[in-house]
Length: 518
Image 1: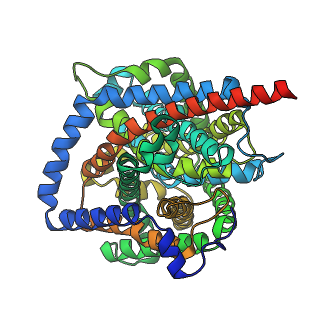
Image 2 (image 1 turned 135 degrees about the vertical axis):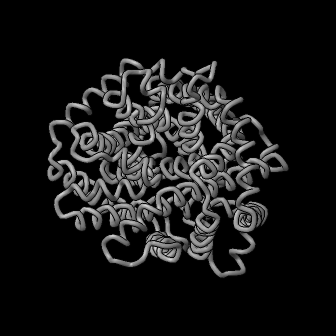
């Protein structure tokens, strides 16, 4: 991307902004923030009723979308569409490692780290896990499923669609509505286009809020343990401000700053994983349980994808699988745009298969090492983490207790804190850039938004998480925000993928005609 040299003075920027897309979601966030803060009990009841309808009564909708995304991504890669190059570069814009680092960290990297440490605990008490064969085999398998090929397929199909739109068709509106143009035509320039973009930006803000609000308390507790500073809301908000400053500075320096931060973040991430793997004393258990969980996933993948628990004997897919699919769907607003943008010069096949390779390698390594380390302590009788969790009912406190079993626990917590801050910063680099792009009426593929617009969105992205922290929202409430926002996004994603196949099919016909003429 080029620096924001075209943006000019403040007055010129104001003329280029799409005020409806910028202001309306901002006002909605302010209203929701006030509602959550002033009426936490009432808001929880409303969210619970909506969650029941969407998560329970409409659960098949999310499951079908997940399977559809995976099938579409593989078809994109291995069909004739796979040979289409995203842009006219002879070689990719970014080297493979740098590209993969930016893609992985722009996703849910901070959440991947958080859930790697604790997800097996959340499943340990589930009746469905007991029915499947117990904690040892299945509490380590389901995290790989919920963070594996299907959720990443949401990113892959959308990244291909956006990359094709930006780099091949060279459209200058980097928005959800523009990706629907091949199917909806001029309707995207009117009312329906505005509706699509408003839903998209609101979903982006909802996903942001959920991410920050779920994992930030762990970061706050880790900092408190190391520094002795009391763990309270002030510390949590202070950490949010630090993260905001870090990613705002990276965004300020443009894509070069984002690329450098992403590469540094990956190195820090693997240092942390190596510390736990080599220093925790559970190497054999981690490797063997990891192999078992990969085998379970491969053997049972289709049944796990399609199990709906129609009789609601455990409601496991409604409580977990639906949430995770919805969670990843709301993040499809920003991350795939970013992946599509940085994939210039790669073919669709390279983008999809390389994306799966890098993303699954990082995700599975994190869950196998961190998750199985904690599970190993539990199953080998070295530390009863489940008892700590049941007694305290505090997931974050339980994770901190797990770190006490590592050599030099303070060092481990410092590595955890630094890695999470770096992950948060790199994730929200991408968010701020994409959100800022949404604010423009038109923006060339190689043009970055103005720094002032990126700064505005950097600050806005902090408001909703802070409100949720003050409202003391439960995990269920936070999950519900994502499930609600993901419901309309699913329909829009179908339109975008449909539009891609229509437009890409026409492009291939155009290329065939050119080849015949030559």
